[in-house]
Length: 317
Image 1 (cartoon, rainbow, N blue to C red):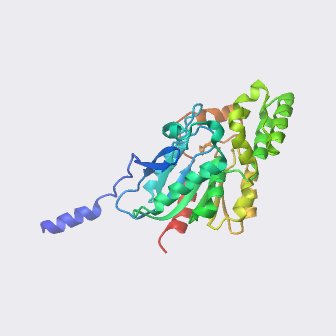
Image 2 (cartoon, one colour):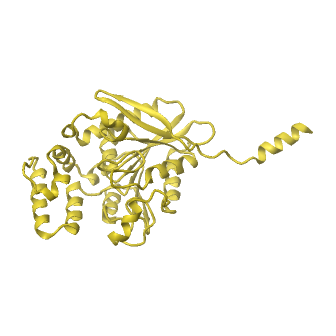
Image 3 (tube, rainbow, N blue to C red):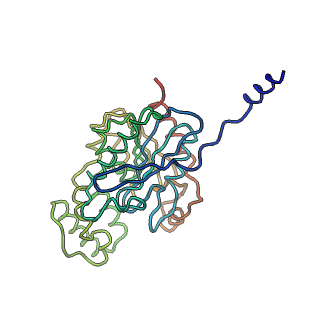
């Protein structure tokens, strides 16, 4: 009778909560160690796993930077882990804990980041706790993943607010909206030179943060890549997730990616902005608080779309 009571109690016990603190992980590279964390699901594996790659600039594994603190990638990693998908989040070389892995900013190229993705993918495939390996790239992280995808052979790929046009086209669109006419004209002249593979020594002081000499080699390497062309050659199943109130990457980018890849699925989330939060308007002033509020939850329609796709493509077969 006592045994029966124990069994009944065990059967009625709720499932354990997701692990709240990611497991620290490291990846040794020729120029230094990259640091990250894996959000692990509750219970015992093996689990499917995805690499969750941050976007452009000094964005860390949590989705935060010097001027932003949305915690969006931390929220997403833990939410997917709670649903049974392990998530690797890491600091890009030169950023946060991985800062010492990049000695000089002028040495970085888009292919450098892609090579790091390959290293992480190989490490995950060698870990018996994990099964199929997928990739979720936020913003420019999606482009980096597309560059790595051919060799990485991901089992599923998600472009999350990722560009569908070459970066210079997206950049021009953003600058046209945000700069006075004369300054935009100057920025376009710099972009044209970088498109041609030529560095620019003298840039307007107002544009130094964007076009500083040390970042120009990276921009040149990035301008040569067309996300849609890369998506067309992608072997993995593709989900393109976008937000209707994203003021950084438009829904036109999502449509271009979907059109380039037969069989690609689209998840257009109404009222989701670039940092994956619910913001019903494209007004810039109304958008700003969401970029700096780590307590504002993710858009409620995002997780179900990602979860359904990843479970189907990475689950047992």
